[in-house]
Image 1 (spheres, helix red, strand yellow):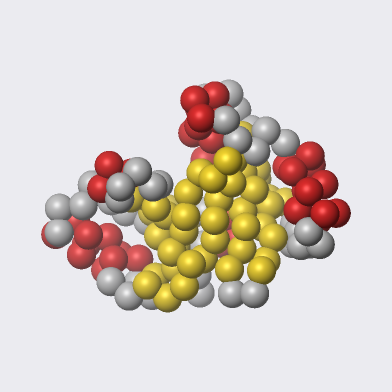
Image 2 (tube, rainbow, N blue to C red):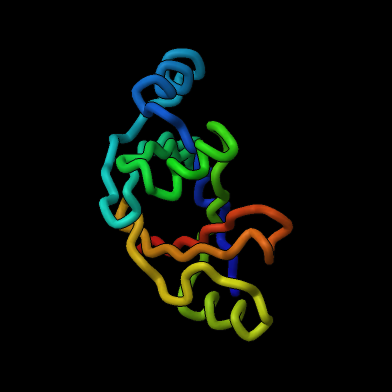
Amino acid sequence: MKPVVVDHIGIAVKSIEEALKFWEATLGIKCEGVEEVQEQKVKTAFLPIKDTEVELLEATDEDSPVAKFIEKKGEGIHHIAIRVENLEEALEELKQKGVRLIDEKPRYGAGGARIAFVHPKSTGGVLLELSERN
């Protein structure tokens, strides 16, 4: 597996609109746009900071993983995403090493990225997203 960079840090929020008041108005980090990812029942907003981004995640359905996360833990850091060169190879390597995966095959995420999640029980409690962008 070849990690390239921390792609983004995902932050679960109740309202992207409210969260942007802090990120844009207070910190001056401009949002590149809001996108809905229906498969994951979430709306996302990416805020670029040099080579990485902050991703704000707002649930679009009460049974979405983000809604359940907020209900259980409150708003806050949801996941860390690491960009890899070849997602299939990374997943296969992790599987061979006995790492517990949430996604054994890539799926599509926000911004056209291909993504897969690694289970927090294999990472010391951190939900890890692997991301491949062209």
